[in-house]
Image (cartoon, rainbow, N blue to C red; front, side, top):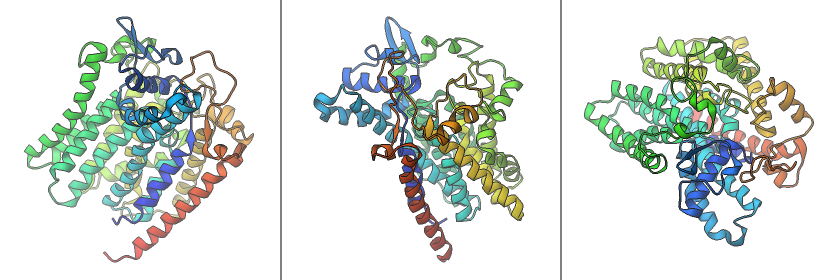
Length: 478
């Protein structure tokens, strides 16, 4: 597949993600607190900032973030540079807001946009025509929970991006017919390991993709380069855990003040529940397919991949990753994920589900016009819902049973956007009824739904560029 569409596709995704600043909340505050503690005080303890979050761990009289450190560690260079030149502005709300916004762009939005491009490239390897591959990539970028979680300083989407980037590096090498170079293997291994540094459940992706590499990489001694990359990344995690929690393999969840982490047989994990499966896949409360119905196409698409000898291994990876994350989410005592508009614990599986969808459209069969139209409508519908949630407030209060009908859509149609009243550094429970979230249109002086007009213009320009690039690509001789 040619690369003409790569740049506009990247800019479309990254620009959409960068358009929104979601402000604070327990999860993002805990991660940003660690950034500030390291840069400002040279410590891993967040004692000086811990009043702004409930996602924390207490050990030996000190308070720590109870999150894996990857996103925070990635954000350190950005915050350190800003902090060095901020002068007396360091302690202002405005500085902290813009700093956390730029840290989110670097640590979450950027790798997420790269993963969108990698999805496009892998779809091409699986036989999808460039326009189809681009459509799947855009649907994933803007029509799944990847959209809102690429605007939040959480770990789910960044971990998904790194794990998927590693998978694409390996899969494209397998289908190229040439032995993979050392650099590619080390990079893939590091990306896999770093996904775990960002979010502990990414160990599921590491295990599946590791088996995939073990199956095809030859000679086997080349697997050592992948292992080297993984170990370099995990070494960072082990050092952090040893310094903060007293042992390289001691997870922060052991000291978490959150009760769900102490339930079940291991860190909140219990027996998978069929009822929970319904809630996280179908129900209007947290249903994955309720908010992104086009992903249902992953079911027949995965079957077609598995029955095609050329792509059976890639299909197996997609199915295994998806099933493992669904099983994990169904086993969690706090399966709902707290405040949210969907099953955030399934975010890591989304790019793999998108590849399964590509298996359907890349298959050597003719889809009827009605089927194609239904799929297109499902994508447009999903993109609209994800835009609404991202623009209004991705972290919908937990007690809202129908997030879209009862909260997000009414607010959107009333022109009430960026509703978060929790700042990135404000102590919990001391908030003012002031919005700390914003979008770039509001920064330009627009209000209500009109603040999304610049995003619409940007999407039209980059989308038009993408279409032109795809047409030129189609006319270019092989």
